[in-house]
Amino acid sequence: MSNDSIIQMWEDYRKINPNAPKDYEAWAFGDSKEMANELADLVLEGTKTATASNYTLYELENEALPLVGLHNIILDGDGKAVAIAETTSVEVVPFDEVTEEHAYLEGEGDRSLRYWRDVHETFFKKEFKNLNQEFNYKIPVVCERFKLIYRK
Image 1 (cartoon, rainbow, N blue to C red):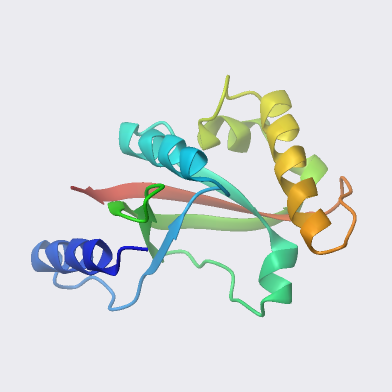
Image 2 (cartoon, helix red, strand yellow; image 1 turned 135 degrees about the horizontal axis):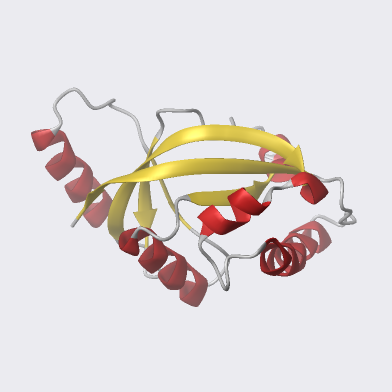
């Protein structure tokens, strides 16, 4: 991860938003360089305004869930900062109860719930396999919505 680009983006943002919180999270989408680039581009276009993650990972790593108001520095596949998004809502729901609206807001593929389920089932199965656990349709999913608030 290129810490310089993260620090620089945050400093640039804080210059024009002096009341911004002091803390932020920096992360990339997905599990590959290609996926990180593709999804970061969708955020920059304004197409992607939501994401979903595996609640079990937060639990196992004893990590706090994202909170409304959290500032997220979105990284590309090379770990360079490309945007800042603010979390606007967080909900934990079973996989099979993720809504069509959430799938649409994630902005991927044809934006349908069917596409979302296919892609995320594959993704979560891989994560669970790495944990020696089984995926099922009732796994808790962290559904996060955000708005783009700053870009280079």
